[in-house]
Length: 292
Image (tube, rainbow, N blue to C red; front, side):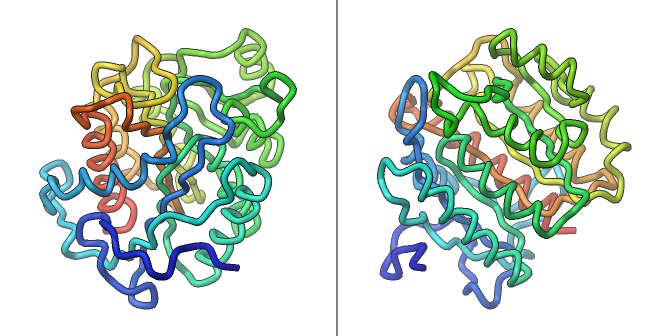
């Protein structure tokens, strides 16, 4: 299956210049926004995040590490069939299956949050004790959106049904239907409302030694810090808190086996505030999870 444009010669994430065979970490874009419920455009997010990364320093003052020490490959954006969510999901799962089979650390860039669902499916086949850390403004626990089960408002409900709700940990949640919050309270999953860093620090010891997949929706940030996303929600965290949360995960004994960052929609942010923040979060994840 042809997942990427083999002739792609566009922007890559800063220093992600190794060949696939010589890389430990593979970045890839999942440019899909077929199911969004409000403002489309996140399919343009991965490329804008790459463009913003050129303004980053290779060195992280937060972690005292540099990207120069990593072996990274940027595969570019996947060639997903426009408007076909089901086929796109199958393609993403097949690609991540290949990455895991080849021993790579996958770091995906969305795209809408539904793209995380096939990634979790792929990881669940390799890691029986997989846990999810979900950092987001929205619960994403709907069973469907207006009758459609493939929606960016459903991936964490699907993850709960696949892995067991007790293995899903959500942080920063400040929006959703009452039924979603009822499900979280009754199912046994963990949900921290509004806050991220402090409840995360309390929960991380429970994940010591376990394989963990981290998914970050950029809209966990307050719109002042990330206006360029499809569904902004007031009352969010600062970019500094998110950086510190990534640092807390990297310093814990949890075994992070993959990660993604989704929902950057550059059309709504002409100053690139959101893409700049997202590119820095990706740098911190790369250094924290693959630079140990």
